[in-house]
Each structure stands twice: as C-alpha cells, then as structure tokens.
Length: 481
Image (cartoon, rainbow, N blue to C red):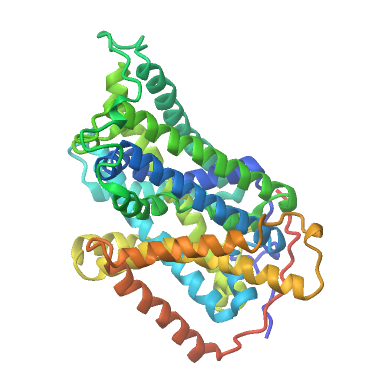
C-alpha cells in the first residue's frame, strides 16, 4: 500500500513534500529554541539548591555528555533519512513499524502537552505588566501568534525562531560575561562595590557535594529533561537545504553551544549565589543581574522568559505538525494530514496540533489531578524514551549497514566509536528511567508512560497487523524556497 502525493488544501497544485527552506543557522536556533526555556531561567537555582554548586555543575556536564551521545547518533540517521518528522522513521526502518508508531505518538503528545504549559506560563508572566488581563486571554493571543508564524512558511518559522532563540542566547551570554566579571570583583554597573568571590561558594559547610553523588544523579534526571528539544534538528531534516552538509554542522554547533550556555551559566550562578537560597524566591538570572547592577533586572528577565516560553512553544507546534504529517505520509494517520498549502505547510496537521494543545491547557485547569496528570506524566516519560529510540535506531541501522557489506567511511556523517556510543547512551538513559521510580514526584511518568507505549503497540497491531504498511520511498529532494 502506498500513499498518493500531497495536494493543496485550496484545490491548487501543491508541492509533493515539504520545502527545503532552512539553513544550518536555522536548525541550530530551532534546537536551542526547543531546549532553552523555563528549566534554565527559572529552575536552575533549584537544581543548585538540591545538588550543591559543584553537584549542579556535574549534573549539567553529565546532561551535556548524554546530549552529545544522542546527537552524534541522530546525525548519522538524519543524513540517511532526511525527511520531515524523521525521528519515528529511524525507529520504523530499523526496529519495525510498530516501534516507529509508538515513538511518533509519544513525541507528538510530549510537545502537545508542552504547548499548553508554555501558553499558561507566558500568560501568568504577562500579568506583571497587565494585572487586569486574564491569563486565558494571553493564551489565546500567543496561540494565534505562534499559529501565524508556523502557517506562513517554513522559512518564516525558521527565521522567527532564529530571533526568538537569539534573545535567549544574548541573555545567557550577558549573564556569563557580567557574572564572570563579578566573580573577580568587577561590577561597573552596580552602585555598590562587590568583593571578588572566586569559587568560594563551591566549598560549602557540608563539603563539595553536600547532597552526595546521589544528589547529582537525582538532579541529572531533571537535567536530561531540561536538554530535551535538541533532537528537533532531526524533525526539521525534511525542510533543510543540503542536509548532508547542514545537518552535521548544526548538530556540532548545537552541542557546543548548549555546553557553553548551560554549564557556563550554572557555574556563574553557583559562584555568586549562596546555594542554600539559590532559586527559592525568584529566577537566579534576576538575582545575578541585580547583583551585577543591571537596571530593571526583573522586567528584563520577565521579557526574556516570556520570549523563551514562546520560542519553545513555536518549536513545539512546528514539531507536532511535522510529526502528524510524517505519520500520515507513512499511512499511520488520516490521509488529510498530508495536505499542504501552496507554500508547503501541513495546515490541517498544524490546526489539529494547536487545538489539542489548547485542550491540554483546559485540562490543566478543570482536570489537573486526573487527565492533565496523565498527559504530563506521559510527556515527561517521552522526553527520555524518544532519545532511547534514537540511539537504539542508530545501533541497529549501523549493524544492518555493516551486515549488508556497507563501508562506514562512505557515510556522509557517521557516529564515532560505534558501538560504544549508542550502547553507553542507552544504558545512561535507561538508568535515568529506572531512577524515576525512586522519586515520588516523577514516578507517575512510569505509571502512565509505560502503559501508553504498550497501548500504542496494541493499537498498531490491531489496526495494521504485525508488519504494518509497506514503507513509502518519499522524495527526499524537496523544493527549496
């Protein structure tokens, strides 16, 4: 069974597939846009409070290392399968269509739930300036803005996400530069002089690791989630110019920038703020900016965090639409989701994803302890489970390639140190999943996440049989805007 070419939703001829309109810089910023959010700007202080200054730095270094492992596996797959929403394609081609099906719906639900939470958080923050405007009004406004940005063209989305992400990056770089100066006692913006503190905060009364290695490991679970979104490079592969060159370049740049931005900011925050109070009352970014004398620090960071939330929502909505489009092209979602506008936008997939995201937002108010708890738990589980699917797919892809007589040196991008890298990544990610069971706050992710995966497999077998539908060899040379 094969799929027909996509058609225009307004009756005019449409491109057969999505347009390749984005460069490496767009890919990097899309990945950064999906990763850098409230987890860094708001929750990083709590991470320091839990694990101690050095413990938090070690947890973020471990998280960055796992991201590197996942991304180098993703690079090989994304160049081999440069199609839209390709994360589930990797799993389907290497481990079977049922696994691809489960991976796709896990990832889609993960971002749909994120949409609702990003809109809500943005609306709450807007009340700082507009206290008389209800939060739901801002949710509708922001949903409309992100829909418009995604509905025009892939290039408009990519360009907007570039600038959204750039605002966040500038804020983080400012924190690192001004904070580093303050560590050595140089605070030219502050009316009050500050003494050099160096790294004295790292030597706490309870030692270098006040919570022990256990604190580092428990914190690393949250850090893994904080880094989720980097895999958006693979989702956008189908709309990337010259994927063989731009995808590897974007992957390398993304990992390096995440390492510098996340670890650098954590080191500065940990050095300047007493870990016992870090992040307990406000954003650690606000605390550091006030320490170094940045005027209107709270208002500046309010704007930056709102931008960060909208950036994550923008990337999430893009990801949801492409995943539905990709599922439909494979034959595992209604055919209507393959319909494209004249500019190559899967409009129906976009509308449905946004609508379900708003439903998720509503459930957070009317069914927070039931439906919404289930959705959030599955989304949290999906963040790590999808990474596990990526590294497992790379392992099986390379094994199949070698058994077929393939020469790894001919691959445009190949995962180094095979098979150590995918195996190590899978072990570390599995350990983080197992550790969730020992954290009462995160345990529901297992209670609901694992049954959801089992339900996806059951639904696949009932609807499509064990072998599923014959894969479509999609045209990978999509038009370029």
